[in-house]
Length: 136
Image (cartoon, rainbow, N blue to C red; front, side, top):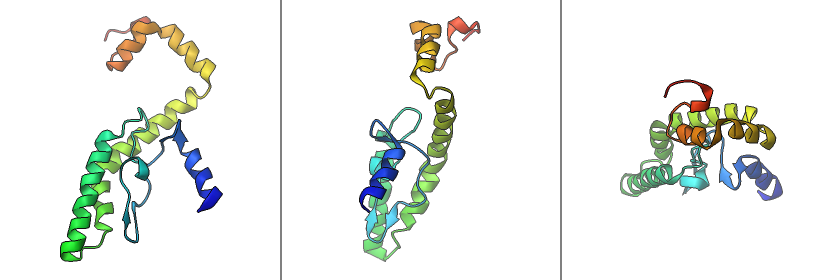
């Protein structure tokens, strides 16, 4: 593990919140990862409570089935992918697209200044900023 592993982690985080596409697997031997530790965070907004709760529940189900019936722990990978992969992957792609354009703080500051507080409020409510001339 060591330094090389930590470098890879830092490249996939912003302000210590994991971002990026979901990993290929969340199981290794007898370990199941969930929540932030598994990089199951919505890259667009840093939200991770719902994904942590669901992945925690799914990992618990997989662990229980493993103990009761001998079901392989890799069944957890199938379960979390079915429930979470599509929205997490989509969020990572949207984040990557937006980060490409707003990578530098001066550009982001200029855009925010232009739309103003009412525009930011509108965008947080999933409406078009009034300054841009479209009806919500």
